[in-house]
Length: 581
Image 1 (cartoon, rainbow, N blue to C red):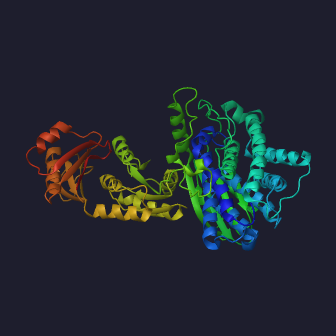
Image 2: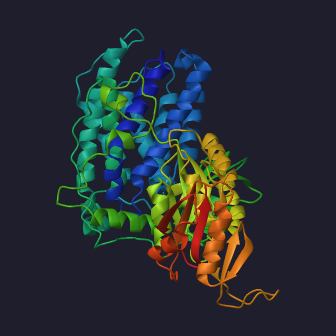
Image 3: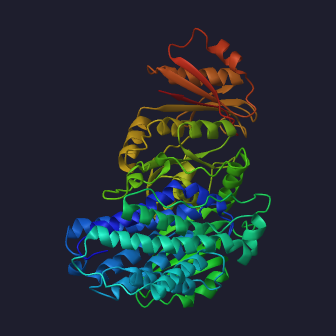
């Protein structure tokens, strides 16, 4: 870009991100290497979004000052660090290194306007940086695509008739046009490298796909070209999703894709690789002496982080459950109907809410990203369905509602929102949820819903376009006006002699209020909850409950002023979960 306008640089990045968002799911569905977890598009988008947010911060700080007046080195260091800290997964970390390599080349030539020569050199340095970051680089991947793009541009420059260098008074629209032509030639080479990827990498060939990261890179550059021209992106071929009957590299060995940053001084990336490889695979450690980004597939995220104790401060922790990712990806692809299905770009509503002033028309069409989502712990098919109907992402708490911190952290990762409210559904889960919130690099708040029915009530208050803090406050306010109860079969005889093992017991706010037959206990709880002017009493029926809905309605008939709502929860342990609103 010319030195006069940081906003033009931002618009180009926004164009790349918006186009990637529009085809993000297509990129995800190609993902089989190195692990078939279906998140390459997500991870690349998160890396670019971190860059865009850093550019927004710089723009707020410096306004319209020229790039060289600000200092290219400061901009490059800020952007490269943001990309590193925002990177997730192999693809995101490698993309962050491509960004750093390109930025380092650009900063090495202060005062020069960006032209074909500088673009070629920048992409070549980016490819070198990315190759160096991977211990065992594989051809046919994003690395090959970046290298071939750089080669094409360098060849064009070498064989093109000599042309005068761009001057500082070159109009911005002329410079943008020349950059777009250069990048489009690079995209042509990148597309060819993507197409040839299966010839170079057996995992791609056997799954019948091209490399997701390489394809994602061409999509990003096409979006940049669109922003420079103010037009639609250049056409790119669509690619069929992976054949799920050949789940190459699906991680049966390790469960968690783990990412975190380490900040300190005199950090040496190479010193940590072997200890990390003893805990897992797919290890990447990249960065510089002050900041590292670590990626590993492991069953023990906490041990991986502990390796850096004393070396620096661990932050930006992110854990994804690859078993869940693979299952969701396979289910999505199984539901695809027809050979051409699954290739449609996502609707703008699925795109990130990036500010794109000055970008191309199709970039401005990207809709706002969801600001806040909910992660709910649940047990029972009906309970999971009810939470999902309210827009919550659900993690299975098992029969005892007791997921680990890292299962919760992985669940937070899966929520497609910038911020997350966690509804624990059990007193025993609150501390683990709070620890997961501390570790996550998202903005996370835990609202202490201590029962599943309380969590359902709280989830009703979610407004996705509202921030995390306001959603958490609204949910907490709702819970303050809620009363809950339950009926279960006694697991043991009462020490006070009130009931024997196997009898029904009724509880209100955790206190035993009735015992005896299921009918007696249920009616006692309903009466207790309905006695405070309740307008609605919800009854969630669990697995093996001894009364049918029509029997409950007959019991309650004529005895209750509040409206009665009966739903199937399917939860274990409790015959009925109740709440009064």
